[in-house]
Image (cartoon, rainbow, N blue to C red; front, side, top):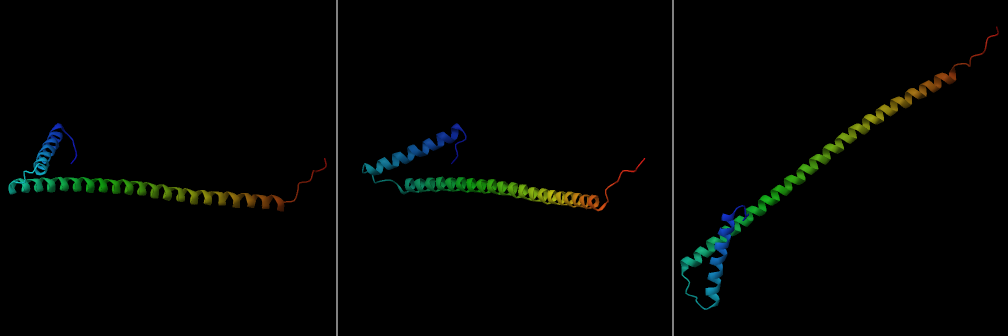
Length: 117
């Protein structure tokens, strides 16, 4: 049960006082509790357990959603970096091939000689 208002705190306090009174009566030897009181206690316990189950289920679902978001973000970052890396490798390859051609072209040409005037 999530406490979101004063009314929730008061409801929890009333349930605690009722449970404490019932437990105290049992320990003091007053075992003449009516079946209606026992049923009411069990109903209250069942409702509390259902609330706790719902809260735990909601918390687990939120945690799963958070992990799914984180995984999606990391997968996207990986895909972007891989694409950038491939692009950079292509550009570097082009530059290397172009500079290799220039070097070959320069070495093939004969050196200029000075003309006599």
